[in-house]
Image 1 (cartoon, helix red, strand yellow):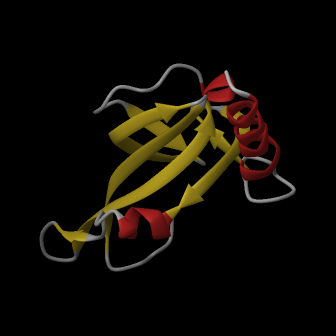
Image 2 (cartoon, one colour; image 1 turned 90 degrees about the vertical axis):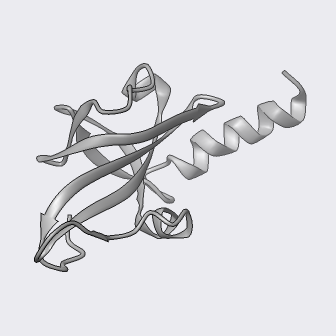
Length: 114
């Protein structure tokens, strides 16, 4: 790995997934770990609330987590519990030890709450 790539990877873990900087501790499948939940990026990727029936919406959020903490990349369709709420994996990619996992859930009403 080049020195530049090593520096970038170090920054990702020391800043991006640092609970004193951007990340927060979340409980994922019963295990506490630093994670960054980004609902704005999900919107940028055109993954928004999608009408799913009268008063029901399909809700997406993007979760960034370290592969070292989370484990292997989850398969699409797998169920994941995030902070006590159940979601289905809509998409998942991994790059340089960071998983970007798009989760979806069916919610009632137009609330933006998790």
